Amino acid sequence: MALLESKKNRGEVRIHESLEELSTDLADYIAELSEASVKERGFFAIALSGGSLISLMRNLCGAPYNKTVDWSKWYIFWADERVVAKNHVDSNYKLAKDHLLSKLPIVPSHVHSINDSLTAEEAANEYEFVIRQLVRTRVVNVSDVSDCPKFDLILLGMGPDGHVASLFPNHSVLEEKNEWVTFITTSPKPPPERITFTLPVINSAANVAVVVTGIGKAEAARLVIDDVGPECPVLPARMIEPAVGKLVWFLDNQAGSKLKCFSQFSK
Ligand SMILES: O=C(O)[C@H](O)[C@@H](O)[C@H](O)[C@H](O)COP(=O)(O)O
View 1 (cartoon, rainbow, N blue to C red):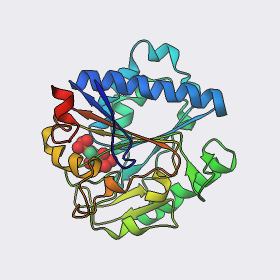
View 2 (cartoon, protein in one colour; view 1 turned 120 degrees about the vertical axis):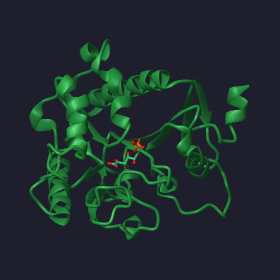
View 3 (tube, helix red, strand yellow; view 1 turned 90 degrees about the horizontal axis):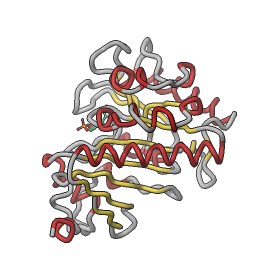
């Protein structure tokens, strides 16, 4: 693995030789953050996304993490969710439950998924309300620099169009400054109805990790990580700039192949 500091505060970039190496590193990274957070605050509040991220977290289900991680202190959230029934094939909750959560001893009442019987707007409002209650009791930490929750870790994937969570390019949702959780009904990636954390919430997290794999995302990765100048299109992933938190990019060598730093890595 190559560890690189990006230019202009775009965070730490980790480029991996293979998906297996990335999965191992990702599990180590999450386990370390969990340990530090439990030691410091007694809780680990982690937000997941959908997509390939979940299968890349698979190593957490095996040794040594199944024994060494304090799963009883984990509180699970979703940075974005598709507004479908929980048993629907498109549900991010179902994806995480089937491939991750059902294999880990996480306390069921610590799993905070959306209410799937509501409209997208209602589900977003209710989800924000749930998070507000947990901020009040400090299960979710509070930001010292904004009026936002400070998740211990927000895990994101990125689409080839540069979207993260359900924040899509050229969508008014990118302007949302007041809500913690908002909704869209016109997602260009199906299904159309989704709820999503807003940029202020993502940028208030203690740690944000973006996991990006495959050659189809190499150009977007270049545009959001490299210093490409003012002609760069406005891509949601480029708007991730944690105020005080730490940003880490987990790439495989295909997704990282167009980065300026890649040539020095591949020598
Ligand atoms: O529910 C979703 O659709 C997501 O949370 C979305 O933001 C996803 O993480 C990216 O589209 C990357 O998905 P892939 O890694 O599968 O390409």
